Length: 335
Image 1 (cartoon, rainbow, N blue to C red):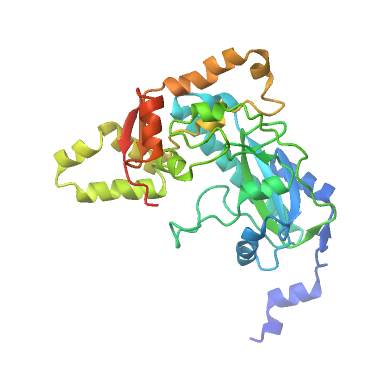
Image 2 (cartoon, rainbow, N blue to C red; image 1 turned 90 degrees about the vertical axis):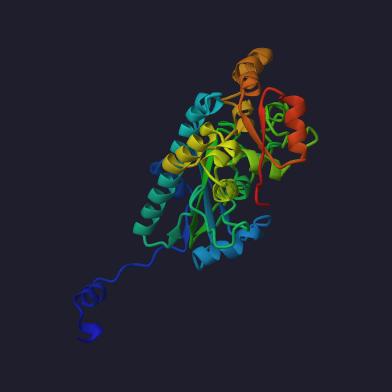
């Protein structure tokens, strides 16, 4: 059969579809994003200054990519603040799923209008072929900041002017331009209150604004990527059951099982929990700062828990000095 004689070809050629508009109205795109479930949204060209690091990746994901549609979904604050981290992780996992669902729905709506569009994961899966190099497709934080969803605070999380840092981010990459691109917010919602500094168990956030990525990565992401690799190597290196149990506690083994079975758990993220910024969030902090610290920050500081550090690192020194009741666990982070 000739291609021209195929039923599908004949049907399509007999009912030509009008090509989609190369420029979409921001108001229309905003309407679609909210319909998809976003709590806020902004739009920036992929070649926006400051986003050069992602252009190649965006156009590998979608040849002809022209615009980022940045969006956020809100989290339930008190879940994130709970010292019972199973409650916090339930919220992280739910909101990450919500963000991916928003990306999926928005992509479907735009696809149905004839556009080409992709939605990279809000967090995982990532491209692990070059691990421990870059695995993410789009730098959601940088795009969100450029698109006006907030500013990156001292703790390196995006703080929304209204929702605070209790948001998770997503980006949809599209093949069209937007008639009225967004711009960054004109102030930083970060209060520089330093509660994130006080709450971080490994001292990753410096009072002067520095950030120790390795310290954060080693502890908070213990049951992700390199931490998982270190655990597997511990299993492989153990001579027998007794040797393994001398290296890894039953609770740590159960925790790793839980992450494998029910999505990986963050060990802390206390910087997010402690942050009082954002107009919807700041009220209790303004009304009673001491009470806010006592109710939100101190339970995280007082929590008895293992803290994972590289031997001899500033993080180890910080835990031993600042949080002697927490249990130092010396590990490799693979970096």
